[in-house]
Length: 294
Image (cartoon, rainbow, N blue to C red):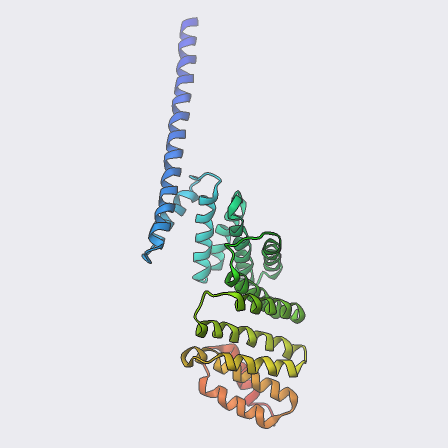
């Protein structure tokens, strides 16, 4: 009887160790597979091929729990979050970005944490959760101010501050928006990432945003000055067409507020040539000014 108990005990221990050993082996093999897919994603990304095929497979394994808490797992989450963000599927982006936030053992890759906060801020902004958006935008800004990360370059900083500035504008915090948008211009001036024509479009768009802020602050002189700066930056015909109706409607709003009726009508006429009827906000502003009594 005693021998039988011993045999059963030994069998139980061996069986348990066997199950544990197999589970450990299987888990690690799946983790290695996930990380190999991550490496393949990066390799394929350099060739402009569809890297999402491999990224999705890596994400599927990670979603099943096959990962170690390291920068590779965090980067898969960040990449999936950014993918859904680019696709406009903000609700799908948020869980991946939050998972990335939890996997914050990035060490030298601290700049990725800043990007995670920035993307969470944008995702929450787009679903109109403004309190959460501001929380994460502020965390990203704190990271930019406290970490000297060369990987987060001048263009990255310019884009972040413009994004945060527009968010502040939409929340009617115009003075704060101005400070952030001016920072965006400063960093854009430092970058050598783009050709002069592309850089001018970004400068023009930022100047347009600044003009909107001054208009809301009733500083019509500054609003008009930045509106003219924006017009001067938009030198490329095709790219200019994207912003022309918005620009001339803004000119018209400024002139209308000044009481300069003839200039307001002239600018509105120019806006009509470029009007995109699918852009409901711009179209509504156009109609509002068009139907206004002289």
